[in-house]
Length: 445
Ligand SMILES: *[C@@H]1O[C@H](CO)[C@@H](O)[C@H](O)[C@H]1NC(C)=O
Ligand SMILES: *[C@@H]1O[C@H](CO)[C@@H](O)[C@H](O)[C@H]1NC(C)=O
Image 1 (tube, protein in one colour):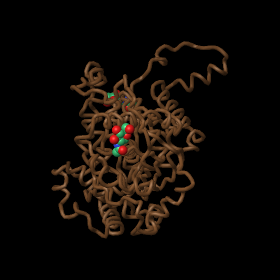
Image 2 (spheres, rainbow, N blue to C red):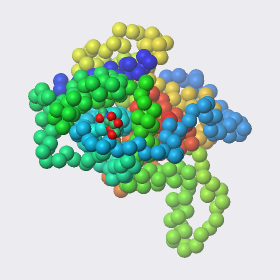
Image 3 (spheres, rainbow, N blue to C red):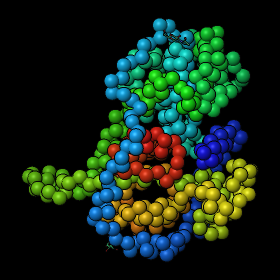
């Protein structure tokens, strides 16, 4: 609960940033590493643990136990296969517009909520607008990431959806709402608002103006006491309506296949060359792999106010970041590192995640896929994890630079590829509870 709260708080702070500090992020991100640098973390922090972890051997029995799927513990899929479509509204009450903040997975949750709210209100949903996130800086739109025609088609018996507003409402843009107070903007939707809140507060706006724009909208619909059909519809959006555009799926499939058949690439080449197939049975056996989702960016490291073992340079760098971004007002700063750790408030470093995986019984023959954006501290920060798990891959190591051209520098598309690989993995482990974790765990579970 605490974690969730501080996550929301951090999210809010991040949302406010573009208003407060335009241009600051680009300034920070272009600062180059220097000799006196936070980028030189070398020594493992937990040396003796790392030593014993790297010498461990796990029996075959224990190894194969690890890959056995967990019992369902009573969890059931939230989308029923015999899903009778709910009836479309006889008449639309108006257009519902939402502007979604956050990274890809937070936006994904927002889309599920937007469809649910459109259903509650009998409104016509306008394909959601994605805000550019100040940390990830990606301007990809809904249609750049998700297959929009599939989305509309899957939901065609549930709600009305339009790609764009008709001309008479074309004034209702993000810019229009950014420049003044407007009657059609719903600005004060409380976090986890109920269905009745929407009926009481948004329906009248729709009925008066024919349109309502809700912003901010992240986490604005409750999970408690929602009518079952609305909750099911939300699931249908997440698990059926939202699929990535074909080029993301194709790249994801290629990466998954390279993880499962590590030496096939080479084999196909030589087959072509010789014009005949040589059977290497062992190479055709599908391997299993673990996806580990690691979020360890500078923003998060600084905001936690924890000590990550990088010495004075790192401490100074993080303190400076806190000063610049939050004017030093970071709740965790009032605690010592020890206090923060014992309260469980420190994100795990890559090294600590390596130790955790080793303790679970994974050994150096385990194939790992690292789902991650920029890791604070770069290669040096990951080196211990890589030593423990030499068969560690990521999208960069598995895809050619040609394959990566379409997603390069686009945080949301990169996250989409990681999500896709995570979805097709044997084991998904999240080292940071958050939106990706929430969106994925129920799918693979
Ligand atoms: C894995 O660890 C074992 C035992 O410590 C070692 O003999 C082996 O060379 C290691 N394998 C790899 C791929 O590093
Ligand atoms: C939405 O439409 C359904 C079916 O036509 C109707 O029963 C319900 O009262 C409507 N709700 C609103 C908020 O208009």
